[in-house]
Length: 204
Image (cartoon, rainbow, N blue to C red; front, side):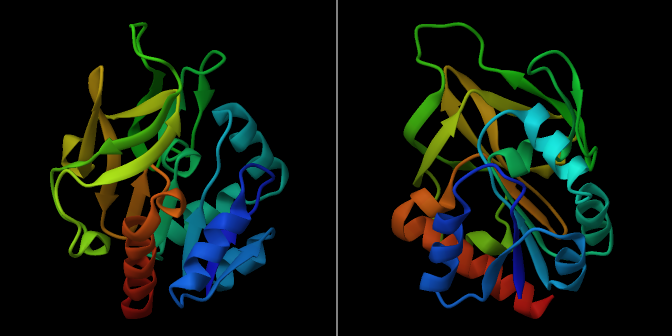
């Protein structure tokens, strides 16, 4: 079973339905024990970085998520689930993240482009993770975000996207896959990514 972590932010039902649509056993959970017992962990969410960290901490889920990653359990981060993996965010001042990866989360610089970055945009694939099997370079996926991650270790960058600047849209290292875009909103391509993650969990 894959645990979709519910910490009070984001439309988790759409993520759960997308997994079920492709035959992957994924369930919404709210407690640390369910994370411990799961074969894989999914952390979705949209909203403020600070609220995400606060809710995870208040619900005593932070340690369970970090431990599951350290044990090598497959992890899929979506939007906020990518951002909180990093050291800190500059949203509403400096807020500390889970520090799985060194780096920070910053806001898009002021420009003529609208923020949040919302809608379809392309992926420039830098390295191909197992959950990108058959996904073509320059494929379109769906984004909704005002902040993006800046990893210190560029080797973890799996894909980038252009929106005024070239930003990291996916990272991958070992058992950790995390993306700024929303696979559950990215139609057939997104469903393929979720199915591939489910297959990766089975083999792990």
